[in-house]
Image (cartoon, rainbow, N blue to C red):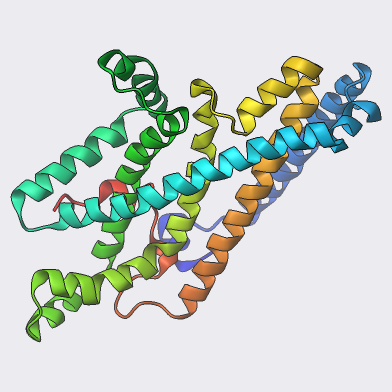
Amino acid sequence: MSTANRVLFDAPGPRAQRRIVMFTIASVLAALLLIGLALAALAGHGQLEAYRWQAFTTGPYLRVLWAGLEGTLKATAISALLAFPLGALLALMRLSPRGPLRWLATGYIELFRSIPLLLLIYVFLLALPRYNINLPIFWKLVVPIVMVCSAVIAEVFRAGVRALDRGQSEAAQAIGLTYWQSLRLVILPQAIRLVLPTLIAQLVTLLKESTLGYAVSYPELMKQADFLTARTHLLFQTYVIIALVYVAINYLLGQLAGLVDRRLGRRPATGGRRPSQLDPTSQAGLAPTA
């Protein structure tokens, strides 16, 4: 157990360790039993028959799934390209000493962090077209994702800036740099290094939020899965394969974030916290308002 954990929790004694081992073994056995029962039930209904899976190795099925994968990756990539710079800009505005900029950014961030993404998508799908604001289907999905995710990413950037020692900005201003020059030349490069693994991990969130494309009939993976199940009735097999595709992509992104985290961890920013100490779900939301 690490030093931090020993501070927060008492180290378990011999009896507690034995109970932990017993509960772990019992949990694993229960999970294996449930998996076995589920597989037996599926086999009893013929869902594991080879011919039901072989269809997904044929050209027509693969083309439909590939089209969905392209749509998912395109929506995720464009959302990231727009949300990350916008999030950085909002973070700078919220850190600004100028009140109007800070209030505007704070209002945007607090508003769009509180609104469910699906509700915002329905606004673009159903409400705005009544006022002659009718975006293409792709942008009805991407614009709401960017609006919500940029608010979250702004807090990640702000947490990275606040994780640096105050001495960094004080030293920059001591050599004659202005507030914006010290932010651009000294603070931001180190803050970006700190939050880079967290930003890569945010791609997983963007990828999963692209599944809401079914609401606007955008052809991403879930929509293509609906298309296949409506024609083949291979409901279980289709969604298992779609789930495996998501698991594979998210695993690769997680490995990339871990690799970046480890490489940056060997060269921590001067005077700042290590990247692994930044938690986007806690620090971003709990950091004091500037």
